[in-house]
Amino acid sequence: MLRHAPTEGAMFYPRGLTASIGAVALAGRDGTIGGMVKPGRERESGGPRVRRRHRTWIRSMILATCGWGAFWCSAIWARLAEGWAPSPELAYWISTPLALAGFGMAVFTIRGQRSWLLFVSVPLLANGFLAILPWLLPDAGGLHGR
Image (cartoon, rainbow, N blue to C red; front, side, top):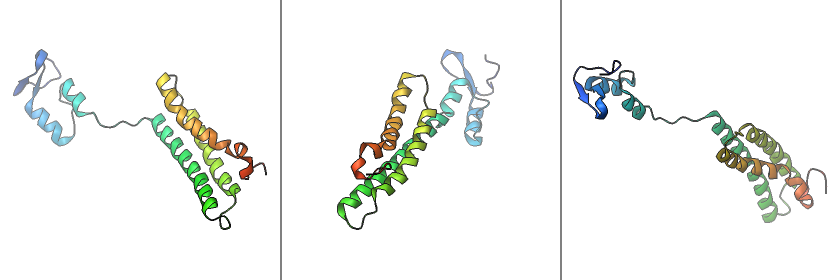
């Protein structure tokens, strides 16, 4: 019998593990799982665990989305209302700082795993292309002039 498992009113689990029915009920009611055997603890504590790098990745993607949104809203506005639209420089001045901040956050999320490198390439490319957009589209009024 396991020393950490309560034995009053014991239930039989495969491979000889036992746990008290009262301990399982008490753990469910109180939110504590200290008296449960290991299979019960693993099943009970499976809540969401967001990692720091994943949160930074999300923030990087949010900045890329905001930057691209500012650029495309300006482009659509210029297309629909040519005389009333703000200059493209305003879109670049809004989107470029967002892109640089997002690119910096994406750089800090890089890990050595192959799958994570593929995962991080999305915000790196999104923010990177947004940052060099004024030089890719010089006719649209980039930061370096027309």
